[in-house]
Image 1 (cartoon, rainbow, N blue to C red):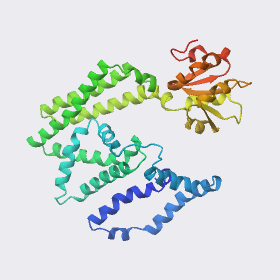
Image 2 (image 1 turned 45 degrees about the vertical axis):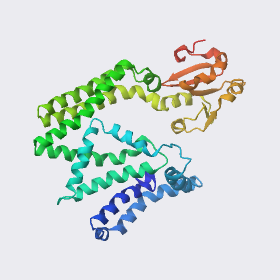
Image 3 (image 1 turned 90 degrees about the horizontal axis):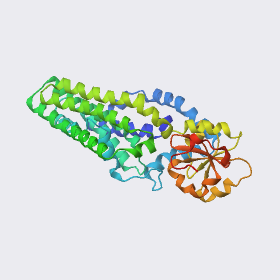
Image 4 (image 1 turned 30 degrees about the vertical axis):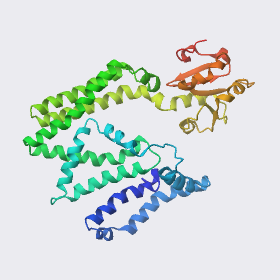
Amino acid sequence: AVLSKGPLGLVLPALVILPFLVLTRRLGLIREMQLGWGALIFLVLVAPWYILMSVRNEGYLTYFLIEKTFGSFASEESSHPAPWHFYIPVFLGALLPWTGYLPAALYRAWKRLAGEKREPILFLLLWLGTMFLFFSAATSKLVTYLLPAMPAVALLIGLLWAEALSSPRPGRQRVLLWSHIPAVVVVIVGCIYVWMNPPGKLEIKYGITQPQVAALLAVIAAGAGSAFEFLVRGRNRAAFGSIVVGVMGGLALFATWIGPTMDPYRSTREMSIAFDQVLPPGQPMVFHWREKDSGLFYTDRDGVVLPTSDVGDYLDTEGEVFFVSDIRHLHRLEEHRERFAFISKIGDKVMISNRPETEEPSAVPEGWER
């Protein structure tokens, strides 16, 4: 964790474990741990990387440990700013189709804090609450940052289901039924919305086609609908199995069909490799409008951003030059259309040359024919 995320790899677990030990009056557990050997093993694993990076890159420790880590948390100039409530809809959406079970799971967990086996529940609640509040307080926010909270909430919802399955009662049956209704509503609303507003923009932005959306909705709807029917009939185990099968079916569909078509849109790998093959050694990759920095990772080249205001001068370069642009930013190049050629198109990115006669017809985006 520290190798990939710096000090947060220590801070996040500590924010959960230390309050737990204080509240359960078990601080003595720290003395039982072999912290000396643990610290030594930790340093042997972590220190070489930071030492070598600091030797090769002056100021690396300051940049990574202070600017990137703590700057992302407290700086007003963070790279991904978002309001404090950013993670509320993200969290609820990420939990689907289990979102409706969250209120009942939290209520049951709160009630079980008064019982004898309260410590595991307390740990899960601290885990979930700490992660959610910590990342909500940070100025820089991304959807994936909330992943550390998901195992805790999954276990809490799992406890609710385990209790209902091991000891079914009418009250618990009603809780499961009512908790599942939001998932059914979301599926119905989603189907109606897609039917009335075909998701054409998804194909432009992510490469997702309408048949793919329809197939994914059909799998999810089948899982949610059959689970609802089973819950109405009091068959809780079958309902749970239907939800699981629906989720697994949706994930399988995404992994084998939808995801691969999205790869060229979400990654610059293919475009970067193609770009690298036409550029002379040592020449930087030129990006129109904004830099696709992941492309530098795949090619080990430097990157240069070409502002729209400089495109004309760049196209007038004596030798052949190339640059990459995002299809969504092509409208900024309309006045230069007769002076450049589309060489290749991968996903939502196109490679452009200043030699119009070299244009590849298959690379021309829709609506950009001469």
